[in-house]
Length: 129
Image (cartoon, rainbow, N blue to C red; front, side, top):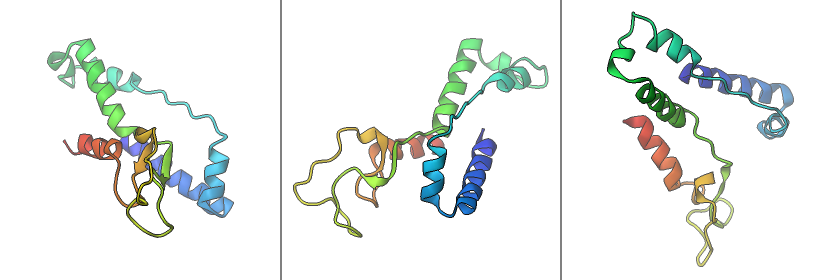
């Protein structure tokens, strides 16, 4: 899955170049339907084949849970990847004094444009272990 996500990012950057900017590409791609079909090959090629010992290490339910946890760390989804969760003056950090943070904090990557939210930090932590 990591290779597929890497290739997807390359494709998106190529689309950005073709369309002239990342913003135009983001707008264009936001109208697309993405379908993610995963897990089949993990079972067929890793769990059921004799070449791997996955079926000896895990029950089918445990292997499914392992795949879910792996996919969750690979497919971090944030609605707001550039906007800050709180009000900031343009080009400054931290949040404006007495400003209120966003209510949907798990949708944001950044608190103030420089510091990760808990949701993003947790995603990075999961990838590191």
